[in-house]
Image (cartoon, rainbow, N blue to C red; front, side, top):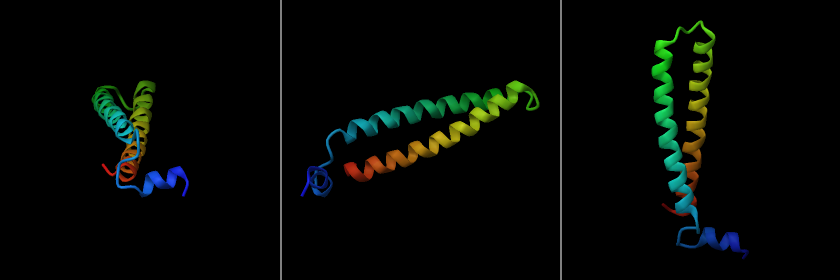
Length: 82
């Protein structure tokens, strides 16, 4: 059995996964705060302006990044048995 399969099949968490998970969780919290601030700004700026369209794009992009981070966090929980 190669090393990667041994790590996955053991009962102990894979090395470094907890640190990766913690880093991703911190990043997720920062991005959530940034997303909230962008949404507040979007309510102030007219939607038909260039700034409004840019903010709408950033809010949409933030949602996609948040979804991907959620997938990565779930993967870390599964692999690391967290």
